[in-house]
Image (cartoon, rainbow, N blue to C red; front, top):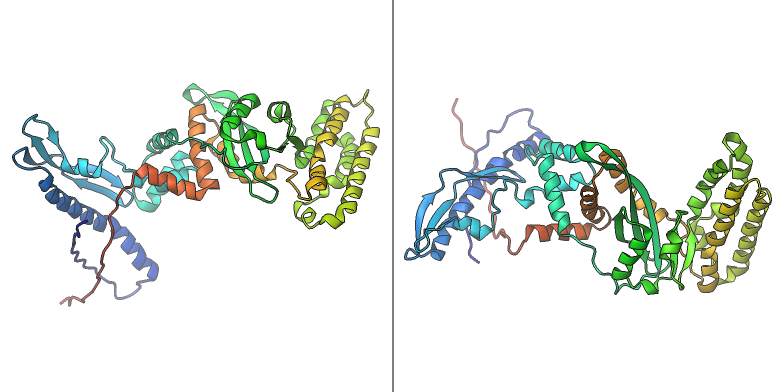
Length: 439
């Protein structure tokens, strides 16, 4: 590795009055583009001079520089440089040594390093607003179409890894519907967006293990079996969506119905049985008053093995509350609501059974997924509005990494930049002198 010394002389006109810290810093930021452009140009010149050693005159002819300057739009602004060119004597092939040395991509004005900030904003904002905000802050930046195309490019090279070596025991799944975009931006109905999380044991954090668009739960099961040690799973946690337990449960797994959804979905079943408005209130109050819906994970985790009689008593109280509610729901009058409560009672108390067997509390709501995905869902439903399958899938591949795994987001950019070696600052010496101005 060789050292390259670059000497820079900068002269500033300093106001005698009204100079503030912000004014000083913004002035430096404004001039960053000009300073960096000059430095980059000199480094390019120095590298091309050094590269003459790699192109001996008996094999190559140096033909000066290109007549049109190459335009690069970097993170610190525009750089224009006329590349040196050589011709291979034997074949007549024209070569730009600096393009070969620095692996400068053809037909691209924006290097990858200029896209990290705007693409990071596009995770949370629309492509248009991300491009606009980048230009406002930096003075230049890619347009929305460039951001979109580079997002697709990065995501296409990203895939879910195998996680068979991780001893997951708990699987949590959830989903929502998303508006689809057809030709010309028109609405094209809806598609299902589903995701899955897994945890090794109670108290361990859940990590995202996959998401799917327009895939049924059977296909999701097949994908998870390829990437997880699925036979090791002991519990499935989900809301009340039809077909989930049938598709995802194994003989060794137990099913825990999300308690939060159990309470909030109750009113929809009453509505299906013809109970509407204020007529629902006595039944909903009967459901809300059940102690099950007032439990908090943090309080349960304080219980020890000596509290087992208390836990058993609590289970009895909860079951009795559901029995009283069922008594108020005769099957001939409330068939859907009664079936709903019976099914919920069968799957909503599984976490108690787990504690009585292991004295550890598994989660009993899907809030870990719902709260974590609030930003994802907000971007999809309120910022994006309508999505194509590929566009949404590619956006998600990057979004889940930036939001849930910042280290993986950083690693993703290292791979995209293809960083092998980088410029390293060896020394920096800064001095100053006042220049006397005679007026």
